[in-house]
View 1 (cartoon, rainbow, N blue to C red):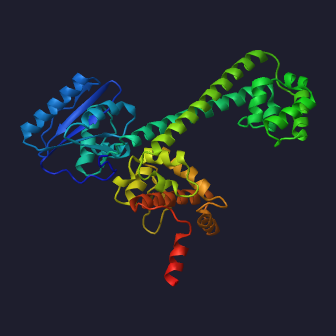
View 2 (cartoon, rainbow, N blue to C red):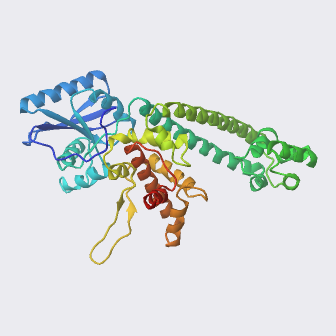
View 3 (spheres, helix red, strand yellow):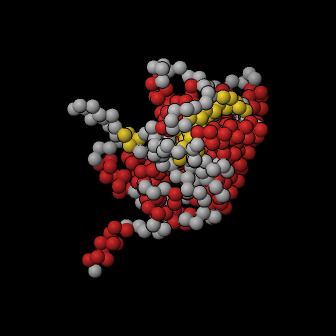
Length: 418
């Protein structure tokens, strides 16, 4: 895998041409600048192979005309629209860098003392940011890591879609049987069984108390008993849900339930594929040695990072995750330290849920978490601090090619004493 760590780019030397791109869905805008200040007017080209080749030829001609040796191509961090062009350029002898949109927004104000935003102005501003040395090299996953990134992103979208459908389902159920939601969570198997087969209060009441109790016992495997069955029976008997247009609502509920089931199956298939590709990552077992860190979380983190081995320091990977700290202080006032959140949001989300698991009673960070709470730290801040510690732990384990040892410091001191 190529060296693709997110690392700050040093100022451009006098032998390098800067080419910048303002990415669009259909039209891109390119711009070239030489170290002596010579440049070309921003020009438009399209998302096609012919236009990409024209852009490359024009860039090579400009480089030769100015007598330069190297090319740096930069653009703002964007969504999928940059990917075809990015994969075209990565095969060329160039250095690809990305610029934080926050930086371009602030530098833009200096250009003409105006917040004016145009397709012609933006490439120039991106070039200014690169000249100042504030660009970052790209994180480029390849092989199994690239598969993991795509699978992780697909899983996240599927989960968001499923959550949206569950919210719609709750709204519809509330209209025809509001008491149902107070007794059963729709995420449970028992609730889903009743939603599929006996959604209306009339159908549930018609079952009778004994049949409802038998269903509870069978589907919940004894977790829900006769008391809950009686509550549901009484709720169905005295429900305030509407009956007008009820059949149409039930039809939509059935449709949503089918889609949720399909999304569940899709998420399961994605997670299985993630586990397959995870086994192809050489250091995956090192990460999995951390107690409480599951395969899906490990696969997701590797997909987001691309390759832990391509990072030299923990600060670089903290910045990639947006977990690097900053404060705003002035004079005698000292501001609170916060995380920047200028990184990969899905990576932060994975680490946050891993932190929740790590601070449980038997988790590896339980004692550390309790110490933070005892010092008066808010729970949310403590969990973010644990997220940072977990990321640091993963980085160290991969860097040293070792595995996690529980109570390592205690065992180490014991060996020294012996």
